[in-house]
Image 1 (cartoon, rainbow, N blue to C red):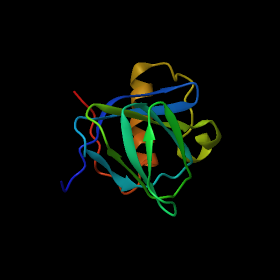
Image 2: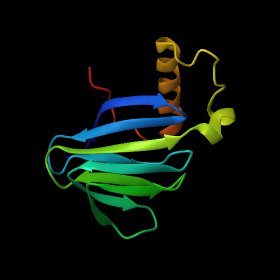
Image 3: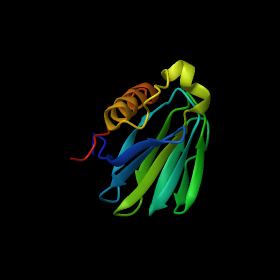
Length: 134
C-alpha cells in the first residue's frame, strides 16, 4: 500500500475544541506520517492501531485509549483491525491569536465551516492523506 487510506468521517468545532474523526476500512489502512503546529490528543474510539511517534518505540493502542502527541512531532497510525475509528482533538482556546481571530458570529454555519477549513489547513503539516466523506 503506497498511499494513505484514512477517511475523515466527521469533523467540527465546539467550545474551543476542533475534532476530526478518522475511519479505517481495513486492517493495514494508515494515516500518513505528519506533524501539527500545536499539541493534540488522539482518542482511539474503536479497534486498535499501531502508533508510531518520532523518538519513541512503536506501540499498539486499543479502544478506548487517549494518546498525547506533542506539537511538531512526526506521528503515524496504522489500523490493526477492520473498521477502526480514531479522533484527533485540538484545543484552540490558547491558539486563537495565532490560528485565527474568533468572529463574533461563531454559531453561523458558514462561519463555522470556514473556521473548520482554516483549522484543518493550519493544523496538518506534511499530510495529504485525508479527505472528507460526502
